[in-house]
Length: 365
Image 1: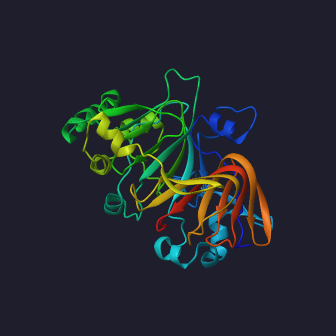
Image 2: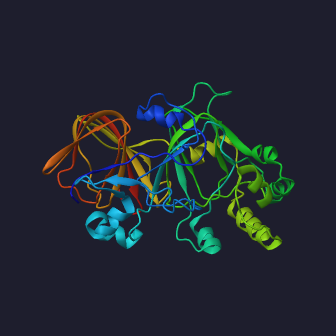
Image 3: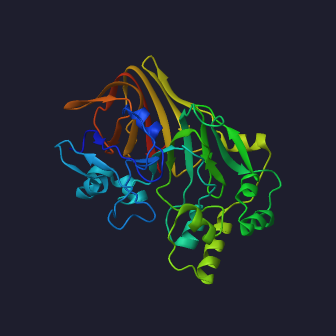
């Protein structure tokens, strides 16, 4: 049971949209609806404020080799050392130390940022901040303008200028203080803690990030509650002051030119290994963050899946084939989502297939 890959159960959660997720998964007809514009993949992380009737909202389910379907965190709790390994547990406990999502922006997401680990610890007493990355795997062809993102402060932006428009509730002015970048399928962007950002209309991305759902918008508490229909309970002056402190202190006001911003946040591929079987490249790696990483493995024939000593989460990006391991095999095809326990003996992939392999903190290259 612990020495073979597991199939994850597909989901969609929160927000309106999701057509591109359906399309990627081969669901017909693909539709935008309220089922969710996100999918959380291999997740043992709950959303920040789960619905009362769904306390594990955001957590992924898994189908075990014996056919039993459980939440992934329940499966891990059954034997964490066999599934995660001692080295992983020393760094991440029984969590995965990462969170993977699909994000499908039918409309532009709200301008926001996420805290660094140090700010998350100071203001929320959390162990994880929310550094993240976007790998663009699709764009919509029926939007009002080509797909784009907002990412990073423009040169010369100061906290005083940001606060002026913040307290005015002037979202357009705040967005105009950030770089607007047209995006193409295949590009990758890193989003550091404290960096302002928003997925633009038409973007469909794989997001790999720290396992946290702390998101800070760009407007004061009352305006945010109205705009996004968030129930903060009784909004007192003390609650507003705490909200302002957390939010305004989370942003890192270190703007730069458009060209420098691209050098900072748009990440080129780095070839990791190659052979007559295909290639594996680092998409996000230690040069960007020590908290997570992911690679793209393209196979034409048969190739070993590297034993990192850590668990992995995989997405089949293109094609079809098989996962081979001692004692068995598993058929895979586009859009399959998989969890790999930390040690699968003789683990290989066979076929014409492209995988994204997501790795937690601690994996080395």
